[in-house]
Image (cartoon, rainbow, N blue to C red; front, side, top):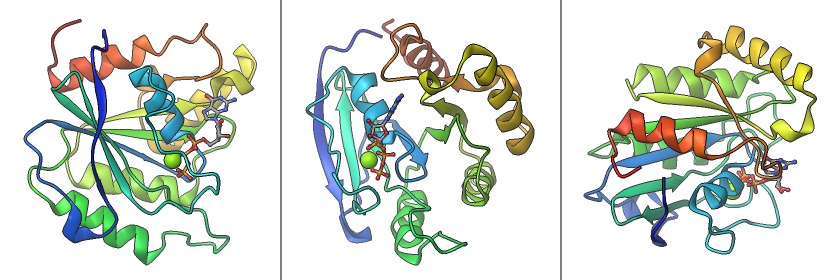
Length: 198
Ligand SMILES: Nc1nc2c(ncn2[C@@H]2O[C@H](COP(=O)(O)OP(=O)(O)OP(=O)(O)O)[C@@H](O)[C@H]2O)c(=O)[nH]1
Ligand SMILES: [Mg+2]
């Protein structure tokens, strides 16, 4: 995918601010600190455009980025930051449920899982929410540069088994290692939402 333009399109801090944009939305789910904002910056090739808070888990807003004037990448607030065992805070739930209830809903969900750790209970809950809503999804294993090649394969197996997703459908990514090209993820996104233009 050649990126010709990328801009901050909108943001929502409370449910009332959630827009109903006339573009297909690709929503990015994942635990706080899993690498959502970094991945979006990398996908867009725009490091400075993406809001990255210095305090992880403090940003409770939804950010919308319009890419090539045709598709919205949606940076959702991270879950699971609190130390509480069930870390799905009601605030997260409130905003994200309003986002999911809004019409039209996301055309695609990218669900980010840290490749170094088995999916958490919150990851499993969110995976189930995405499936129950019937949203097409791509499971993305982030920070693949942190593991060796064999470690990566082992982790992908664990993620596959825990989330009941075919191993070959899980996309490993890294924003630090160019040997793991981000283009493969763009290809999958384009395929899922029927995007053309290469
Ligand atoms: N090594 C490595 N570090 C990464 C990668 N992606 C993100 N990080 C680091 O992980 C940390 C969190 O990244 P963010 O992109 O802010 O994570 P986030 O999911 O947006 O976090 P919240 O906004 O708090 O929910 C940062 O220190 C990043 O530099 C990666 O692919 N490899
Ligand atoms: Mg972020």
